[in-house]
Image (cartoon, rainbow, N blue to C red; front, side, top):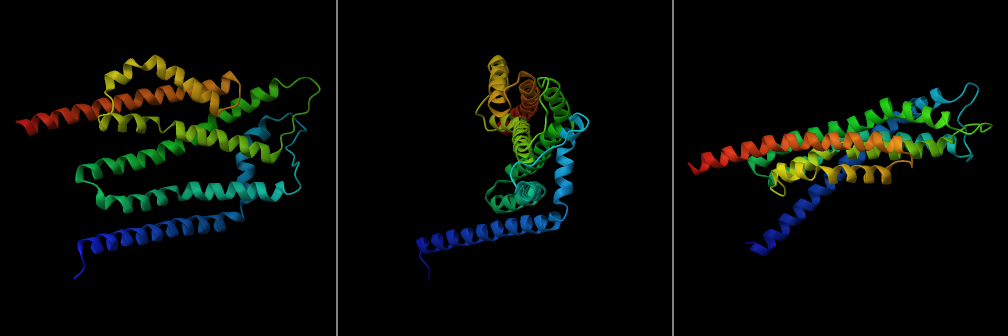
Amino acid sequence: MLSAEDEKELTLIDHLIELRDRILKCIIAIVVLFLALFYFANDIYTYVAEPMIAALPEGSSMIAIDPTSPFFTPFKLTFIVAFLIAAPYILYQLWSFIAPGLYKNEKALAIPLFISSVVLFYAGIAFARYILFGIVFGFFISVAPEGIAVTPDIASYLSFVLTICFAFGFAFEIPIAVFLCIWAGLAEPDSLAGKRPYVVVGCFVVAMLLTPPDPFTQSMLALPMWALFEVGIIAGRLIRKKQVEEEKQAAS
């Protein structure tokens, strides 16, 4: 018979094997999506660059300073797009790995949180792509000094776009973070609401660190972060009210 220590070690090995298998599945999913999208790499880059191209003066165009940029820049973007598309499947694998160790009430809460986190992340990227970029690029080009030809490099543009997209994607996760803090009892809704002035300042500081050094772009990130913080408090009040009711029922 196996000793308790041997059984514990075997269980750990089983978990490590399962984790390895799920990581491999995630990698395979990303690779398969990348191979499927690679043929459309230039089309994907054109779609992402459309806000800048539309804002450029007539007769201007984007350029490639590095000779390898026309190949590697769309290649890089396509890989990131494949990862983003595979994100729900990756989160599903993560959920399948940790779910057996959760209580029933934790599972009931975790599923909506997983779904909400994915939707909010995509919403942040969509906000940047469809609302922010057109305004920001038009503003940047309009303030260019006279005699300066605005011809952005495709690699630099991609780096800028990815930074902004991921900044907005993660910023839109604020309601989830606030909700979890309240649900776990780390903070009370009224306490967080009382710290609103500090939160507003913090939003602008984070926006200053994550976005280009212009007040307009920083405000376009800071204000939604503040609004999402308020959404998190509202959701936290609802869950706290439910927790209090459940505690009263359990006590009676």
